[in-house]
Length: 413
Ligand code: ATP
Ligand code: MG
Image (cartoon, rainbow, N blue to C red):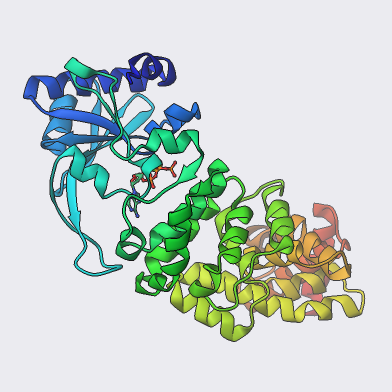
């Protein structure tokens, strides 16, 4: 099957020019170069994906350097072991030397040596990700599909390439489910059986790698369906014993995504994912996934605040009281609790803090207070704090109000 015409139609102009430059340069050097992986899959499905990965039978770094010398493309980075990144206008693409991988033991990173395209495809995760398109002059556009990936695309199946696949690298368990949900595919029968059987192999994977896969899941459009499917397959508790996926996760992840400014969405998903865990459960989760310090803080704060929510529900609080109560928590933890809690007074306080209170500033600053005759030091600190409190509670509104209050306070101090 030849996809030359589809490539021309599918790729944006800059990328197409870059691909042509690479292809031409490779031909002059007698190296063969291919489009591989996700872009081939998505091109066949007709989905946009302009994250191009190219594989070179030869030396990818040398090829990239020569393309950079002879065209307007720039070499962004390269590594000792045969990978390089090229940029042209606003587009980038990755080039890699075709590699052969062998696994010394399950879960370990593979030993890598240069290889052929065949070697490079056989090490891949699923048949739909193990296709290539030739960019060589003599067979430009030809589809290379040794594992019938195209057939699996047509039947909407995720299939591993050999029975040892999940044992070699159990992150593929998470990847399989991620693609299955993203593409609305099914796990092919034997793949599904082996996946279930090899779930314990997740124990061979480092925390950093598992976390990375979760981060990739959290970048999906609807990660909740991946999480639920992982729960259904009993993969989730193998990562951390009390993790659950259910209707609650679906509802809350959806709410998180529909926030006006969903900053740090992946981190917010993490905080919601652990919401039903106990302190011990959370500590186990943080340790297993080697969660970095900042996110760990937000996750621990989420639980700490959750246990204090009843306090916000008992008696009416002044805005300043709400502020002092909540300012010690990471905003992410407050956001997670605002989403996770049911409509209540507590939830309204969390919202008030997030949308207003945390941004309240006095109009007067230290310099202006000095001009009013208030000396720097503890006195000024007290005045500023009192002004801020009054502003939070709506007792001062204008600069003039603040000046008046500052002067009267300083007289009393
Ligand atoms: P997308 O980026 O759309 O999720 P992709 O196919 O580009 O899909 P990447 O994670 O960017 O996925 O990886 C690029 C390619 O590398 C994949 O298509 C797959 O062939 C291969 N790959 C990635 N991770 C693994 C793995 N753990 N085992 C085997 N092959 C892998
Ligand atoms: Mg990709």
